[in-house]
Image 1: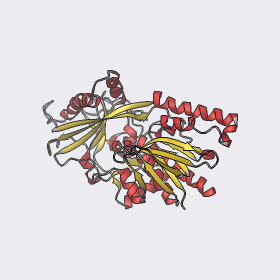
Image 2 (image 1 turned 120 degrees about the vertical axis):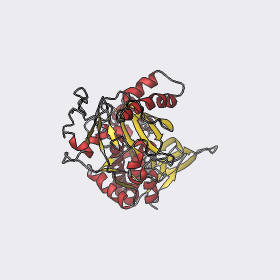
Image 3 (image 1 turned 135 degrees about the vertical axis):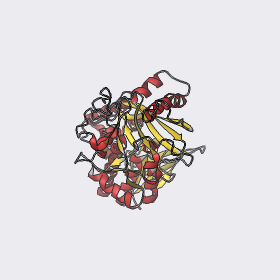
Image 4 (image 1 turned 45 degrees about the vertical axis):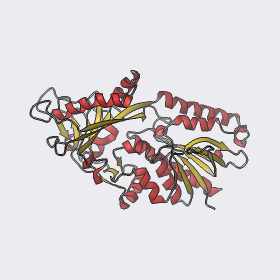
Length: 413
C-alpha cells in the first residue's frame, strides 16, 4: 500500500506539495475548508520561472495548458497619471519622470512585497532591460483555480469543504489520525503516514506542534521540547504580528470603454490605496474576465487595508469597494482628455485577504523554505516560512520542497 500523506490546505502551496508527492509514488489527500480549492492563489496574478524547482513545474503545467506566459503592456503609473512602460524602467527600479509634467515623478521603488514599490517583483520580471528577469506566467482562465487544475492533473484525492478539526500523532508508530468535519454529525477520521500543513495560517501549525504527544520518544530530550516550544510561539507570533492584510477589487466596465488606458497591468507606487491593477482579458485565456464587460482587478495597499480594518466597519468588503472604486476611477481618468470623464464601472466587488503578505518571515533570509520535523513525519509549508517578493511564488516553492522532503523520509522508512 502506498504511503498516505495528509496535506492540510488547498491553495497553491498545498496543491503543488500534493503534486510533488504523487510524482514520487505517494498518495496525498488534500483537505480544504473552502467549497473549492485555490485559497489565496485565486488572487495571485502571476508566477515567474526564476526558481529552478518552480521553473520545471511551470513547464509541466504549461504543457498541460494550466499556465501560460503573460505578455502585455506593463509598467508604472505616476502620481499625476503618467505611464512609463516596463522597458523604460531602469533595472534598479529608481524613480523616473512619468510624463512631461516635471512634478510627476514616482517615489523610489524598493524591493518590497507590499506598498509603494514593485508589486511582487512585477516590474523586475516584466522589464526587458532586466537580463535576469524570468517570464511572467499566470493561470489560464476557464472557471477553475490553478490549484484545482493541478489536483486534477495529478489525480489527487481532494476533500473540499472539509475543515480539519484535530491532528493526533501516535507516539509509538508516528502515524497520524486526521479528523475533518464536512457537515456530518461526526468528523471523519483517517490515518496517514505523514502530514504537511500548507495552511496560510501559521497559528494552525503552532497548535499542531503544541499538541504533539509528550510520550513520543523524541520529546524525552529537553532541548527538543524547548526548541519545539519556541517554534510554536514563533508561529503564533507570525499570525498576530507579522502579517498584513490587503483587499482586492474587481471592477467590470462597459466593453471597450477603457480603450484610452495605455496599459494592461501596472504598479502604482505613489497611490495610497491601490498598489497594482490588471486587465483580466490580457491574461492567457482571459483570466477572471467577465462576459458582461471589461474586468479589472486592483490590489489595495496594505496601509489602506490596515487603516480600514482599524475602523471596524460592519462590512469591511463593502467599505473597501466603496473606497477603492473612486481611487481606481481617478487612476483611469488621468488618461482621458478631460479629467474625471473615465466611464463608471458596471459593477464592483471586493474581497478581503486578512494575511495577504508576511512582513517578517519565520526564517529571515530564505535559508529554509519549509519546516521539516522528521521524527514526527510533520512538515510545515507556506510563504510565511521564508518570505519573498511574491507570496504566491514563495508558497509554491515551499510546498514543492516540503513534498520532496516528506517523500524522502517515507521512502527511507
